[in-house]
Length: 271
Image (cartoon, rainbow, N blue to C red; front, top):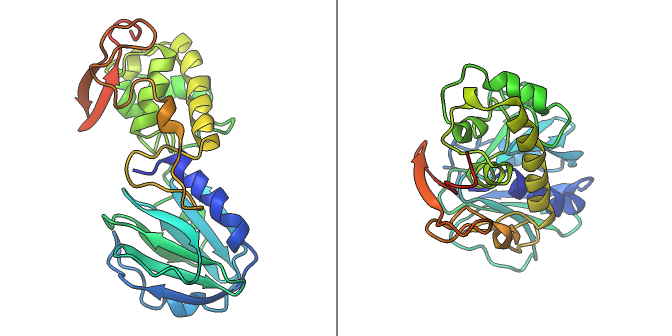
């Protein structure tokens, strides 16, 4: 599933090609995504100029004078700039054609992605208003995380993946950050100490930033705005390595299920 680094990689890849540009056509081949695409949206967007392309959590906010298009990549989606003569494939559900010749194509094999519309402040939208702080900002600091953890009995890993606590720390990055900080992922959030939070916060920020710099993590479906895969997979130390030796102590890594998600950790290095 595309997480924060993959969505930010997508934003950075497509923004230079679309911001400030006129839309001349919008083709919706399949409106049946996670939520139906509004039937009137293509006509509403024709002739409009993209004023901005921002990210909040895993949502991309494409701003216009008349409102905001909210994009979500779902579990398998991608958005990329392509050549006009490239024929659409089976899962290419949306094309946005620009006056400058760029064509933005949305592909989503599992159709859990979304394209929605709001004429109100997008940050008050029901899908966005409840989101926690961005992990790469100063709002997400040691004091905040420690206070949010108090009296919470759920495992620290699933706690970090709660978008109401912090956005974008998905399964891959929660595994990696907890390993780097030496914290057992099954440990109750309420038992995580202030000192452990001091180790965890910088690791979350460093790992997310490193993944963004590497173009995200491609495990199966994800490609960035330029159609290329992300390369952070080569730097994963625990995720997807169950049974393999820990790169710190050589003990075989253990895999458990937390919140129906695979969780890999070292029973020696993480306490």
